[in-house]
Image 1 (tube, one colour):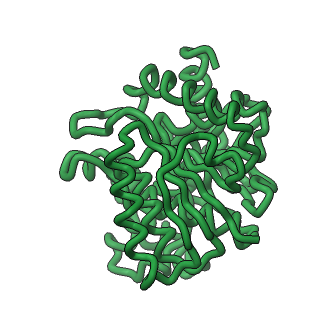
Image 2 (tube, rainbow, N blue to C red):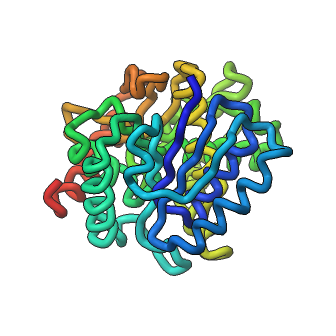
Image 3 (cartoon, one colour):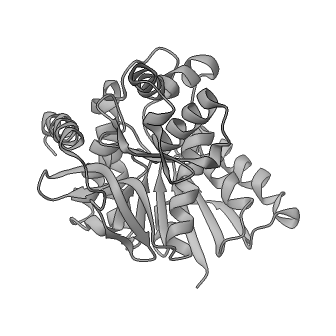
Length: 306
């Protein structure tokens, strides 16, 4: 099977994701770009198309399209939302504006009779992913948010940088909201998958690292005006899990029916979407943090009547 991918929202994140697909050996044949700025997006499609002859991908066609052109797409990635900017201190700041944008997008997606898997990178991430899933006829297994996958990557970077260890030697996860209430599942953090991180870091160092991770995205946005490469790489990893049916356990935002929210735990992702979730056994303290995070997400969702 050769995949067709649609991308709605062709700003920094959407185009970084598209560029990452061009540079991977995965079974994608076509990319369709959708954005309100048609002229600029046509230019972006042409620019990317001119790279295909020397890329490692199997992509033959990159084009600007309308919603009808993604009716037969296999994966739809939604990155559209409010501009990130340099002064925001919480992803919740955009909730009202992004809610209106997502509502309009999903009305058009449903009119186009799209039936594939939807990936979400719009903030506030967990709330917008829930909104999309509810508007997508409650097809929860077909809607996946990037969640704390990027935050987990930032965590491993911060730890490796602190200890001077190879990045790939660090494992462990962040769960909960892609936002202020996210938490490190320190029970999962290991060196070389064997050694407890508490043998290397003090409690204060762990708390400092956790706070740094929460601020990393805002620091990047402050310095360059936006973030893009990290979340695009997270989207690419989820895409590989789908296309290659990798069945890898990754921390992404999926539906928790007990809490009626989208929230990050360990989930298995394959070619039919979410296969399993809530796979990591949290300790009692981590479970309490998960419950707090879920309530914050739920309160946010209720505030815009999802």
